[in-house]
Image (cartoon, rainbow, N blue to C red; front, side, top):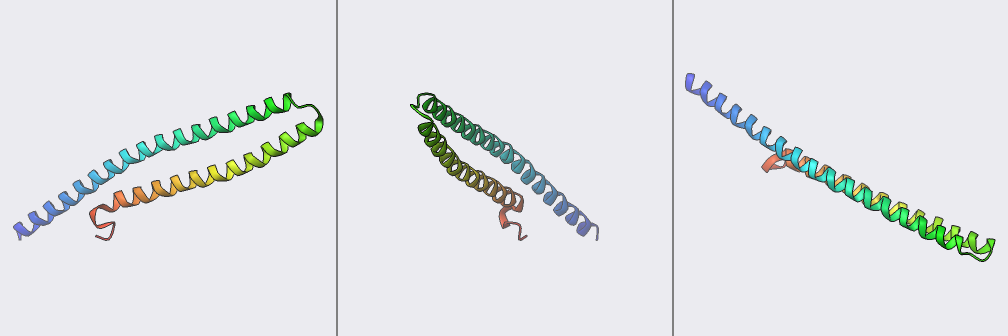
Length: 113
């Protein structure tokens, strides 16, 4: 009976160590992914700012109010498209991060063990 208790304790210790290692790996991966996410958001903000200044320059050089209105309309349409694409991209990144975290925590059996 003492050997059984020792074996059970050893198995439990090994399982806890394995879970701890998976948690550490998942935490490290989440930190890396957080950096990727932040850089992607910054890149999107930079792109949006450049497009806004491009439209402002064009509007400042416009010959009349109709041209200003056309430039503004084109900018708003393009920004709406950019916003939708950026939201999809961010959503995909978040979903991928979630899948990676679940897979990492599931261990070699994918959480089925």
